[in-house]
Length: 94
Image (cartoon, rainbow, N blue to C red):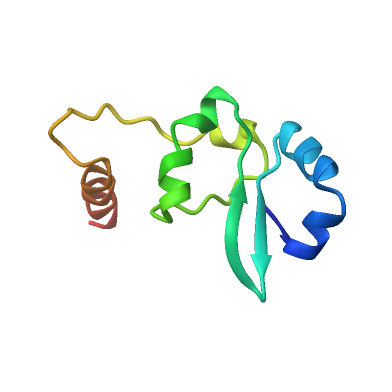
């Protein structure tokens, strides 16, 4: 995942979008604080985009191919995906 400043982004937004189209995730910062995350629109990433946008999930992957290796969980409608993930992590720690 790359970081660029608002100023760098504003100089050439087309090149930033081209990088995202190639699968790169870019964080846009202002004074060192992340204010936006540009995510590829690929189907593998699409299901994580809302969690990334809300700050619940931080991606370390640099391509959508990396995201395909993230495990998939079947989540019932009445269960929080985050609670399910945390429960799974607790089991791994035992």
